[in-house]
Image 1 (cartoon, rainbow, N blue to C red):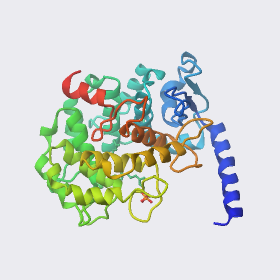
Image 2 (cartoon, rainbow, N blue to C red; image 1 turned 30 degrees about the horizontal axis):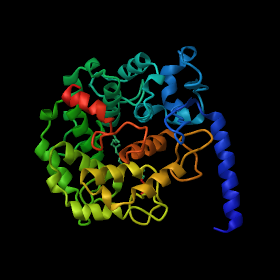
Image 3 (cartoon, rainbow, N blue to C red; image 1 turned 90 degrees about the horizontal axis):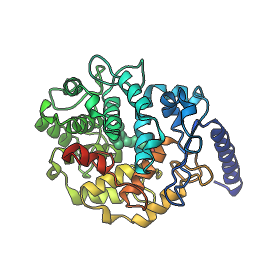
Image 4 (cartoon, protein in one colour; image 1 turned 135 degrees about the horizontal axis):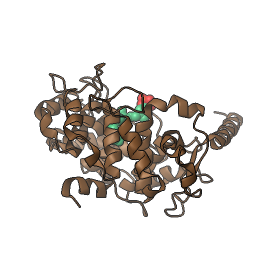
Length: 361
Ligand code: GRG
């Protein structure tokens, strides 16, 4: 790209960002250390529903609300449960979970549950295994797992296991190792792993392992850092990490670090802050995190912040969003960045939440 073109692109990005800034729904002041001082989440797109009614009860410096009918809000309507998980987990890592009204959140989450036991991405949408995990994770953040009919939720998940051990995402039948992870993670949080055939689930995941040591979404599928997180995470939770060739996979994963310090998701691709989670958590689970430069990765993530308004984008100078803000903060947490709670690399929840679930403390 010529210098002139680069200048034009930068101007366009700036204008886009300023427009996006005007449109944003919620500003959350993280207040954790200098650099993370003004975390900007467009979590409003996700969180606004359950705070909107009570806007006046939320103190303005912590949470400011605007319109909820923006374009972004409408097109993301169906995946709001996922957004809630990203935004709320970020807040918890920043020690700011009390910025939202717990009762409103829980009431909204419970209204997303269907008779089948599964949760939808929002009220009035269809249930899916992904939103079911997000709902369970959100309830776990608020110590409200006791709101659930555990058998009902776990029957919904176990009903999605196929004969070969794989999992479908919903009644329409798409199969993907993402859903294997989700099933295993969710049932483990609910203490109901016995509801599925764990051996078959593990064998299916192992059948998705490639010659490069990585994993794909189905047998023979290309290795991708996102799928690797899912497969390694599920194997970690089920105590089956011996199926991973740790040196081979560690080598593939550490090669994801590019010159800027950022990580990509597969060879020849651009770095993206979200891989700070998918790659780093996998490296930690297989005990090879010392094979990348942590300092360079911290710098890359911090370079992706919007220093004026907070929030984190995929790459420096791009527009921030709640997805990348979550994965940036979660990545920094894995890197032991000061002022953040520690996050569990397999359950993708703050460690104190995981300890509460498994050790009651
Ligand atoms: C609880 C953290 C957590 C996860 C739940 C949904 C899920 C389980 C895991 C998703 C794993 C995954 C496949 C992540 C990748 C997401 C992503 C950025 C995909 C982009 O893929 P491409 O091909 O991008 O568009 P690249 O970077 O390869 O160009």
